[in-house]
Amino acid sequence: MFELSMTRLHEVMIILYSVSVLLYFMDFLQKNQKANRFAFWLLAVVWVLQTIFLILYMIRTGRVPVLTLFEGIYFYAWVLVTLSLAINRLMRVDFTVFFVNVIGFIFMAIHTFAPIQASTNAAAERLMSELLLIHITIALLSYGAFSLSVVFSILYLLQYRMLKQKKWGQKLQRITDLSRLEKGSFILNVIGFPMLLLSLILGVQWAIITLPYMIWYDVKIVGSFFLLAIYGVFLYVKVGKGLSGKTLAMLNIAAFLCLLINFLLGGRWSSFHFWYS
Image 1: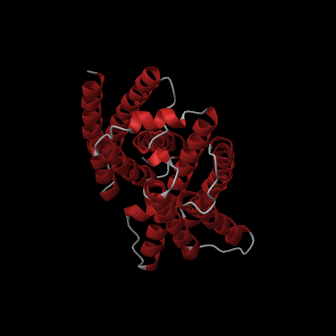
Image 2: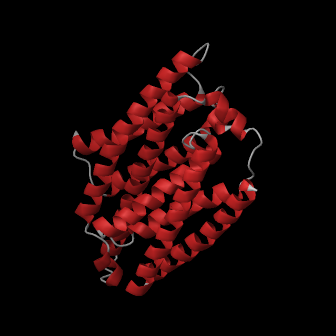
């Protein structure tokens, strides 16, 4: 009964989420404040439903739902919706919410329509640990910061292209200036980098304590530290070398693609990351 109710709840969320993204797209194509406001309130309803699901799931399982890929994708989608609502109210950066919600909708759809594996709960029980919960939660929050950062980089490239083509239209006026977009992308990576570093430290500590042997060349471990190195390079070339502009934005997008690969596929080749089972 619980599973059926949650399935219906997710279907309602997907419908509302898709309408919200559609309205944000209408606002993206032509400035439409009415569509923007309606999209915001629909997204707020989606956030409330997501939060209700998280609370019910936590009550049912007695833990934070982040220990499996199925749960992690949902929590990541919730983080993105939370960030998009905050951006819409606090930062007022046009088009940012649209791109953030496109990413969030993709992950919400993956979670809703992917088959639930029978071993999910069993795998979660095997992994149950406060240290591991903190490790995964901080990692997902850092992914949220990196996701918002890449949206700023995408908008930077869009703004850059419009300026090069001398398209002085309404869209150009609504996108924040290049320096602000670059600064926002940088600040978000400054936030995400230490969070990812702390997450990896906690994850390694958990593995050393829990596992009978530690495989340092495991695909997931190598991929995670490679991801940390890429974002470290981003910060270094920005601060140390003074790199800016289009090249920096492209580097940020490449780093985010590596993040997605590591998040969705890395664990499938891992010898002990049951979180992705």
